[in-house]
Image (cartoon, rainbow, N blue to C red; front, side, top):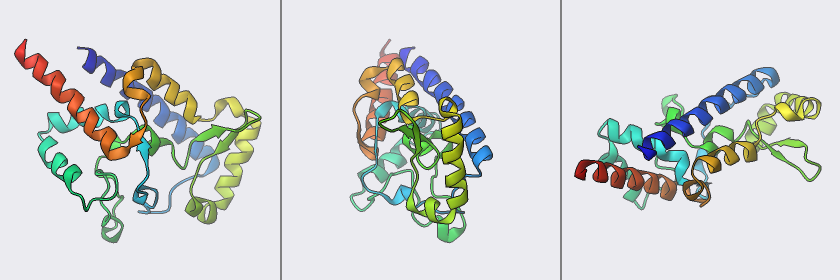
Amino acid sequence: MRQKWIIEEVEKVFGELDSHLNSTAKESGLNCPDFCGHCCRKTDIEASPIEFLPLAAWLYQNNKVNDFLVKLDNPEHKWCACFDPDASAKGEWGCKYYEHRGLICRLFGFGFRLNRDNMPVLVTCKIMKSTRSEAVAKAGVIAARQPDEMPIFSHYFMQLLAIDPDLAVPQMPINEAIRIAIEKLYFYNLDKEES
């Protein structure tokens, strides 16, 4: 039952975060260029296993774990296993599991970090800065005016930490974090079957 509770709590945090990000994006005008996926092409993205427990649960519920593990085991797959590098050419967004993406995936481009003066600073990519410069500037103005109302990376991380520190603290390559989330649910399901 604990795993189910953890997944429900993570989904609650993500629901609140999505709402927070949507209102900030709407107010500032921030949005990704159509079908970009450039940030997903980074090979050094790190995440924690807790972020991907909802994805792991969805994979188990839909009998897609084995196919996903094959993708994770493919040494030629350099990016996040959720990312389809050919998506933009097909006029699609790159994440095949967008509803179940992790915290870093939700926050990057639209979330804020706190600087030394404890003021929010937008964390976004070069592409957004160059193609959405007015929206990026507006987000900065909004953050200066309403610093306590910005979606801050550390605030949402702390919420995940409060749910389960052992699954939230270790930061590792994103595919490793996904694999550990899948394994955690495998052993949970195995224990359930043996009970």
